[in-house]
Length: 180
Image (cartoon, rainbow, N blue to C red):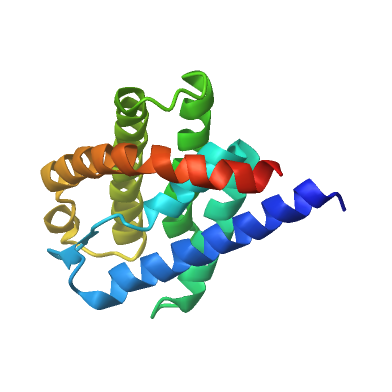
């Protein structure tokens, strides 16, 4: 295995582990959640880093591994609904990477904000669809009480802008390590 592949694999592993840690922190802390069904998306940051620095394949791989592990470690474990909850994370990682490529790898904060807002809105709508699908399949009747669409949209935009501000300096520090 080439030295570059080993570095990418190591960075991907660390980012997937960081995703799981942040996801579990958000899930269990109670500080980062509100309402019945919304958590502050701090776990998206490792997915952004993987997708932007490593590209669509590795970014999506980090999303797959991270979401699978966080499903395994959740109080519900792996079950029939695990795939429903994994799909938004995986597609979010892919969307971030493809938008970054579509915008020609531009790291200006305004451009990143637009990319991250688009992908965050996609994640919000995918999570709502997952929640809706789960509630239909589980035969729950109170699905509309859990959607929080306006809140999800506001937080998606706010955190996309925060991530756009934080991401460029982190990318500058991470890129040389990967490219050596």
